[in-house]
Image (cartoon, rainbow, N blue to C red):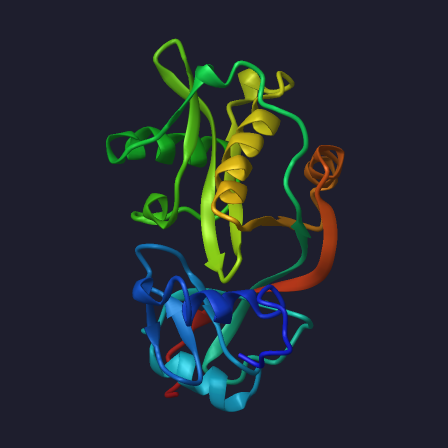
Length: 232
């Protein structure tokens, strides 16, 4: 990474070559998370050699997503599944969580309930070992996990808030904001800055995050690719 660059400028490559390298695979031109953790990839420069290196590390049918500054031609080895606008936001949510004793840190035994909540609410990608990427906090009611938030990407000096979701029956009660505050407080206590990514089309989520005090940092393009059968 160029030392003049901010760690969040090429956030995926930075994460995969620094604090989360142990969960990644690949080489000097392209790296990706091991598929059981996430399906994100990054490269030091978006170019043909990097895309070829990424393709050579993937089997036909595998999916990968890249955060880049622009749309691009992925070359013959990939099919474009989707492109979406993405907003990167930074900052710690203001205020204190209401009755923080209501919430608890989630453990490995909670993963099946975490997965069920994600499948219901679709906050973003979730795989077999995603919950191991960071600390997650949840809220339970009537024996069910109905809201949670946690951590995902880690780069020097920064940790991403992710997996923010709430059961439809429990929305509008401030749970998402309180969970984000608790997750953020733990990040700040480690001397780091919280950040997150949100789809540009998700106006309600962006409005909530801005109300909490996060600020827009940069717009990105999320490109989802599928490896085809073309030789790398």
